[in-house]
Image (cartoon, rainbow, N blue to C red; front, side, top):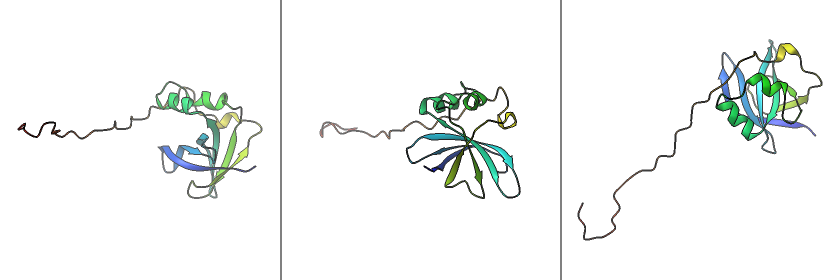
Length: 131
């Protein structure tokens, strides 16, 4: 079965996406890390991550390198992307190259999403009350 992932969010961008989150047809999420850049394509190392692991990564409590060194599903993939990150076909990776691993001590802290804001307005409980 071919695994195709869709771009969800770019986490780090420097001239092009360096680290992104994507998902597949089963809503499994993946972290994609740029590992090689050529004239013809960008190559990304992709690993499936659970929502809990992704949350821990976003909070800055999990090192990026550990996510790739110890994948939760013991699966690693790579993808060659030409142009826009869209409809990315994952190719199983037999062995992980040391050069592809991110540096030690790289932690990521994602800004919090705005909290739900509830608009306040007077509530007319009794029609005889005056405000």
